[in-house]
Image 1 (cartoon, rainbow, N blue to C red):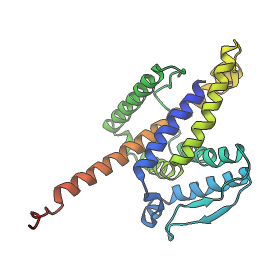
Image 2 (image 1 turned 45 degrees about the vertical axis):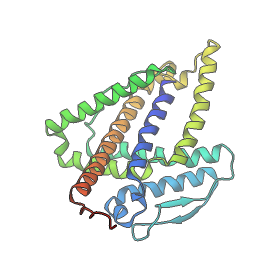
Image 3 (image 1 turned 120 degrees about the vertical axis):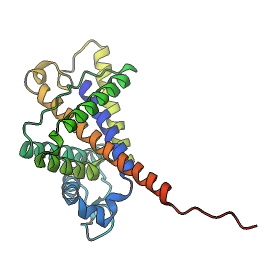
Image 4 (image 1 turned 30 degrees about the vertical axis):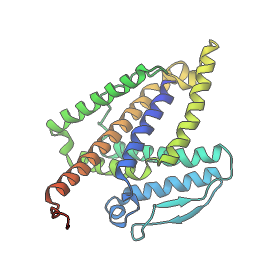
Length: 254
């Protein structure tokens, strides 16, 4: 259950990142500046099309305006829409983790993700975890760890990848729908007194895969929060400069 809830929480942060970036991923200059993200987004859409049985309508490299890749709607019910919404996001997350392993393998998430349960207190737990992650990023910046070229390159790659592979509102709505159905199913099984081990930190996954999986989720959440914070800073700085230097309008003519 905790794994599913963290997936939903990270999807919400990525959605905020996509909403804050706005139409920039369709612009030629932005795509040229963050070309690695464009390439990963195209690969993610290709994989989604292959798994959902659909085709790509168009591919727009930086010399053309528009989304990097635009797939056709899948005709396969449920599975097709889930693949088209989730596979590009998973491709982006995998690319960020691969970049970490190549550039900064010593970068291990220092904030452990706590268990989340289907309870209103989960929101407070999520917000407190985000606060701890941002505090850890501030400490790393003050210590100079973020300014090494390997770390700076990883930050550039992770931002470019997440900016282009974050789900749109429509895709996030599909993800939430499918995962809410999964959460309700797991909750129903738990109400019956059974244990769904492959979706928890228990059973075989607890022994073999729980720690690296949740550490990876923590890294993706950290990268998403850092990217969101960066875009918010740029946006508000731009609005502040625009308000400060915008010519004043004269009084209306009578």
